[in-house]
Image 1 (cartoon, rainbow, N blue to C red):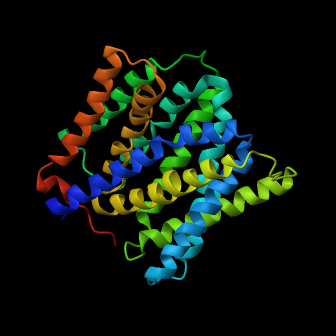
Image 2: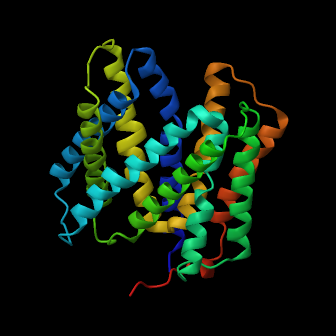
Length: 300
């Protein structure tokens, strides 16, 4: 049973992760403006993140409880995370960023249903209400950020992104809890970096013909919106479980929109503000869950 302190720590870590991920599009756009391509940006993003995380691992020297875990971590990054990223960016030209992001954020439902079917979560009223509020809030916030015609292929790719991300989260949550989360993130980023290195080489890159400032933006993307964000999410998920961590991740697109309003003069209507409030309410509901609802079934 998780105690109140673990609950607060887990939610705080997942919120920090969501906020770190929320600045990703702004850093990416700045790198694009410097002349960096998508494949090159993803390669540098994961190389920088992997180097930073391995430096932390070298200092901390965590133990490796299972020899198979490195392979799981590398596969999570090289296959799971890379697939999710590829599907997301492939869907963008069809339905635009708002609808694509909305389809991606069906992943908390997928995670919750899978855990419920496996007996690892319970459909308590508070949890179900938090899930509904979070998803409805994301839908309302994104509804005012642009529109696009629904395209069947774009819908399929968007839902594929959600399935890939849900699978990535579920496997990451099932990894031995004795494994250090910084070490797990290091393996994930290494796997993703290897995948995008192959992608770049096969496509004739990387060219390194961008402005020097592009390195700074890509580096910030790797350190803040990747290395820190991944580690905080894994650490928070260990404390509160995959279902709650996924629901709290709905803060990310809301935070992205709010950053756009604050720093880039984007407009946010009253209905969108209500949607943002719904997401915040969902997080508060998760925090106020009774102790009996935080029981986590033991794994065999």
